[in-house]
Length: 111
Length: 112
Image (cartoon, rainbow over all chains, first blue to last red; front, side, top):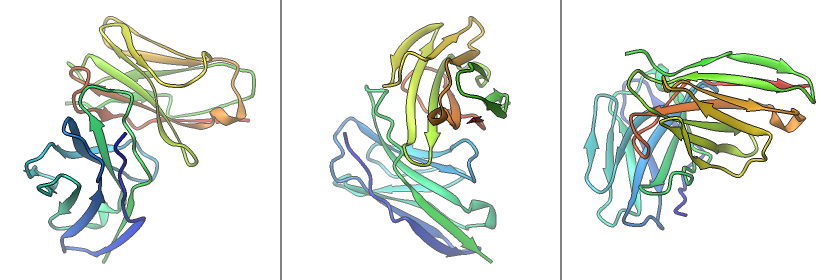
């Protein structure tokens, strides 16, 4: 199963862009990259996902490298409410059981 | 549109008891999955239901069971509770299996 590697923690100043990296060097062609975040033991919140193209929605942008071995989640203007643990997940399209969350990155947004 | 709701939000039980947790998916979503989250093991998949049928099951003992009703609401049951069952139990729904899942707030279970 493709696993992900993320830095354990990152700091970001309020109002600045937060760039969260994720390495998934063993990703295969039928696996999506998903990002969720979890705020203090609440349920994970879906942010964005992609296969190979860059994606943008109202919350964030997802940049996937051309070789698909890494990706970056961008929160364009971080606020204090974005402080959370961010999980990068590689999810096979056809194997539901392999939804592996990993340990994530704790993003600390500071005033 | 209302999100996934889970009841109860907090629960304290003693070893040997059983517990039933409830999940109401987002309106129109017919697939419901259950996960267990602990600090040591992270998020682990329990099972998935679609159209009242269990489609997938994770590696948990038979004490963990679930079901889905015709209105897509789901329940999970844990019998003969053990201390190690203390966890945050999360329900997630999607329109169909393999589509993007949206999680509920979870039920925090403490087994004493």
